[in-house]
Image (cartoon, rainbow, N blue to C red; front, top):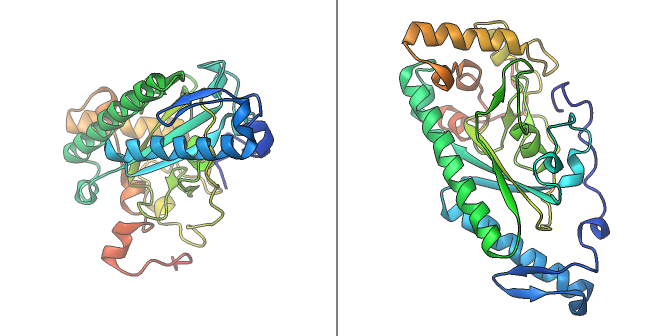
Length: 280
């Protein structure tokens, strides 16, 4: 279930809308057009999709998913893919996992360094992927992993968490973050918007939180309100307090407590067996 800032995330749309017969595009496998027929077009779209995802992994991504542009129809105006690329058809979402030990001391300067390094790594991958798409006849724009950030509204240009949910990378947890089966919330995200028509990934249908409320109880700012609702102002103020205490500034001011205590993902498997329903 997503946080309440998007009441509904909307459907993918049908396959015919995603793969029109009048399609013409350029891939590393060659140019194809109407003459190839629907089956041939679908095969080449699938092949190019695999090339895109494989390149992202080779560049350092830990997870890659694809969402169709139409699934963002219920996003707030000004925060939809077509607001940044009018011909947008797909959104590629990339995740980089944080080092396990970096979170053990969070909040700390060490965790902040890992957080910033992950953002830089994501921006590098997204830039290279956008260039690859351009070299293959498509338009693409990367959306930064963290800043720019509208402080008054407390929103990024595109919600990477919602994009990741739409792209099948994970589901929302009670901490308001995206939880993947493998990494839990211990990951950072970036998105690439493109006019390339890429077969989308299926969204996950599960609930990792169930009766667990460890993040809610651990939050030092009491910003987690249950029902996957987050008091963003309280959360942001906690980041400022951490910055003052640790002599950090700007985007270095991060907390990480709700991530550290979350048992979902591979870090939890190293501490003990993972359960989808946990006692408090």
